[in-house]
Length: 516
Picture 1 (cartoon, rainbow, N blue to C red):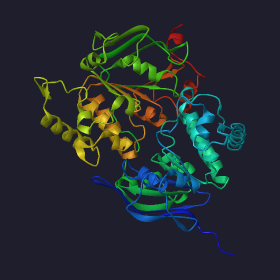
Picture 2 (picture 1 turned 45 degrees about the horizontal axis):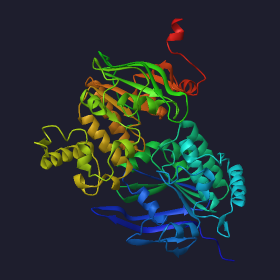
Picture 3 (picture 1 turned 45 degrees about the vertical axis):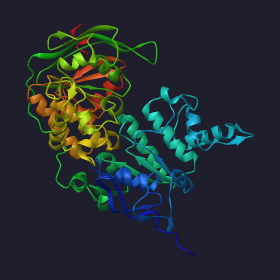
Picture 4 (picture 1 turned 90 degrees about the horizontal axis):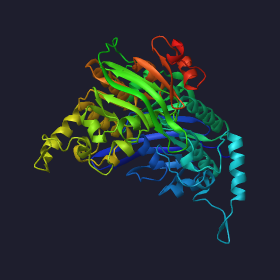
């Protein structure tokens, strides 16, 4: 009897090039049946590109792909699906106005006389969700469910198509700590059922917890494959970045000075339901401190920032920046009055994706005398400035300043926004999940930049879902739950567990009650 091949998927000597860049340079990756195999690397190391080759979105210039020991050709995602390969992309591919069930069966519908037959599909999806613990309301619209639930829909989409090889591209980038824990359990359950998982990540804690083996890429090249049980986080980060990385933020005591941002009784209405998303929130951020708003996603943090930055109308309260009332100011006025904003959604609010990198670098400044004269843009000055920022912040892209923003890796898009906002040198920086989707090297750099801004006397308001980031970066922590500040904590005196209780609404301490 013929022995089953050891590897269910082999990608041998894959090379993939784009204009000005070798995204994958002679990479070999081998996946065993029933294992969780992590693919680790910096932003722009070529992880997503390699998985897109396996899923048929790109064709490699060199190399072969084998499934169960036989060479296969994957020209498009339909070929991949026929080979039982499925992929959950970093930015989900869901139709917002469709229901969960319609999204799951989209492209694999059962019809009779031209009419959709959903009964069997619903039964199959319900069985799958029971079997794998993926509980989600099949009749809810995508736009009304949380990001964590949307991810479950993506996983169910793969399982509905009977996929055996499951690719997860940065699956935890947008999840809360609780959802990440649930996803880890789901992934382990899938592997136990005999599915083979490829898991792109640069979060070392998750890789150590969930994977069996790790393959490391750096700058498009293959560095090595190790057994997770035989390695350490420090070793992996060194393989990934090429040097030792500091995994802890190095900072001195804060020296808070005068108040820069004062928010009094701010209320922001919700777009989703009749209640207010932000209810009567007051806080102050001083020069020379990092104040962090922590909380589980969807508790009003986003709307609070939208209200502060002018992206949403507030319905009550007052915002003062550097002594000036900016409650009803336009976005440009707030920007000119001293507010920098690293937004939560880099695609929607951070970049114009079809503009070049250099155009994106001057989005809020193109009208300054430095960059224009008599209404005409000084293109030389713009390019010079963009090149300076690219160099200073190590923003990597195929064609430098003229790269179209859309074509850059997510992490480098993020670095471009951070570079632009920090370099504007304004008194207040509002940083919303500034390291979402970044690797340890880039996180270390951005954390050091934010601390440097604090030490230079800037006020930093940080909004983060990453508990490690909250604990290590902030000087004061404010916890938001259901649109209210329910606690103020000192990171030096609290624990992650206590922080979690406030975030879940199980504890409250707002100073008001303490004073009563």
